[in-house]
Length: 234
Image (cartoon, rainbow, N blue to C red; front, side, top):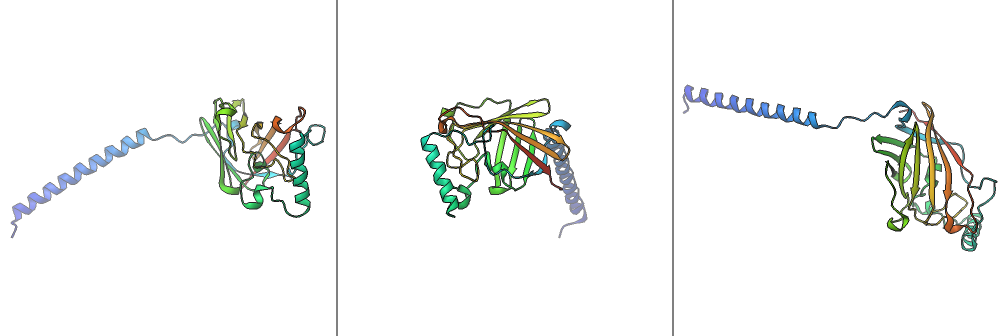
């Protein structure tokens, strides 16, 4: 049977060990806190963070003179087939009919919320529809199309001009269409945007140019798409 002296000695050792462990835990906490990344808060004019929803209807794309782009023979045939299929009630050309992504930029026109998150060198748009993320890397030069693998959302690089985010995107899959009517695009499509806050609850995304020369028989500039997004209540 253990005597009182032995019990006191063991108790003292346990308390000493507990004190040392507590000290180590405290040092570890301070070390973690010292190296933790601070939460980034963008400047007020550049703060797009929040959840947004598109306003208005954007189902078709036209040129600045209100006409369809001058499609080449192959693309015109593809577009005519899409119009015919849509009228017949069998729009198999449309990726969203088979639960595939809208693709960019058409996903912007979908009436689903978009969450914006920001870091010093990245602005991320997370679309509720298909849970598709779009990362805009700041102060980055996009590689040439020949060095890019095409995908649904392409790749985007941006820069700040004052409080306006200027974005260039390319590297898109040609499986999607630009609008619900079935306007086609090629893998050499490039999109230029200017995004800014109109007020605390409104974002404006202006598509200044949308180039897809692989589908056109002559140069054409689609009409700028002026998209308004309204902030949703948290």
